[in-house]
Structure formats: C-alpha cells, structure tokens
Length: 129
Picture 1: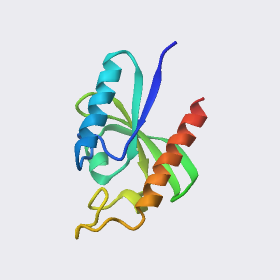
Picture 2: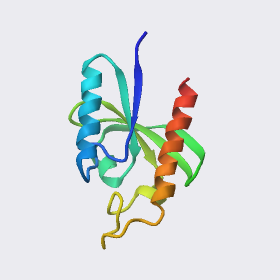
Picture 3: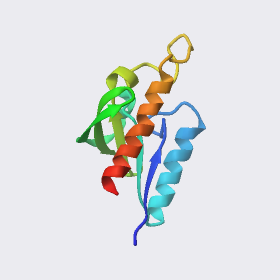
C-alpha cells in the first residue's frame, strides 16, 4: 500500500514565501517524496506561484467554497518537481501581498481566503477517497 499525503499550506518555496512556513513545507514535501511517499502540496494560486510553477494545467472546477467558485490547477515545483495543486480564485489571491496589503494591513477577507483553501482541500480529498 502506498501512502498519499496532501500538504495544505498558504505558501511553499520557491512559489510563494513570507517566512519560514514556505521553507518547511517545501523541504518536508521533498523529503516525503524521497522516502517514496506520493506527496502533493495544495496552496493558493498567487500570481508569483503561477509564474514560477512548471507545467501548469487545469484539473477541476470547484464550486461552493466559502469564497465562491475556483479552478484547481496541477503543476510541478521548479526546483524539486514535487506536484503542486494551485487553487485559483483571483478575487481572493491575485494580490500584491500574501497576507497583507502594500500598507502592511491584514486583508480583511483573510478568513474567507484561507477557509476556501481548507474547503478545497477537503473537497479534493473527498473526491479521491
């Protein structure tokens, strides 16, 4: 039996990073893959993530998320080749900062943004179960 792991995070290096979380998620994914685990990362499709990811292709349409409908894209990390799933909701994630606006204020809809990511993870895994 092979192990399938979906890491869900708001950032992953080198696609998007604001602190240590991005480093840890990417390193953990690579280590799991090297140990023979079928691992993927699910994260928001920030503009910089879409620019840096390789082989981006649509996978599914997701409806009923807290922030509305979304597209799910499959890609590869440019440095490790680990599979990354990008949740594309431009009205929530196509912004200058990951969590804050250019003036350093938290986005007022961060709860909706990351509730959508969590709901997408649940829906994705439920489809694959």
